[in-house]
Length: 132
Picture 1: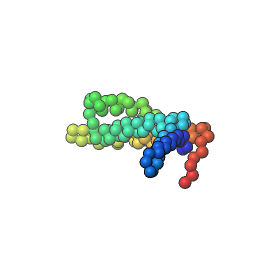
Picture 2: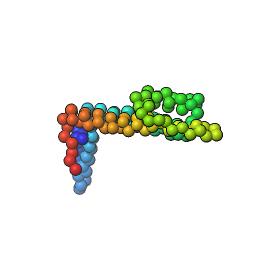
Picture 3: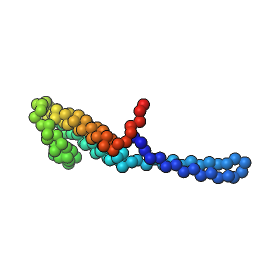
């Protein structure tokens, strides 16, 4: 990604040696800003889905405010993937552990979807990608 680089050079002549101060400021292009925003939002969704996966595996109490919030926020995002695979349920003495394959599929699909959207933005913006 090409960033706009603004550079200011200030020279001060004091004493036998001249002091040179260089200030460099990197500014993201508008397409980079959109890419960063998409990566942030997808990352946030991935974190919430990972919390859901761990809470379900550990048999967290759905009556807890935090657990209910996580389940409520992520429920709509795993809905398209419900029923692809059967849930694995293990009944313990005090808790019921649930493995939701739909959450695993959602984690994978949203990560690939976010990556694809960013690649599409790069293509549409016409920015040249640096070569290694």
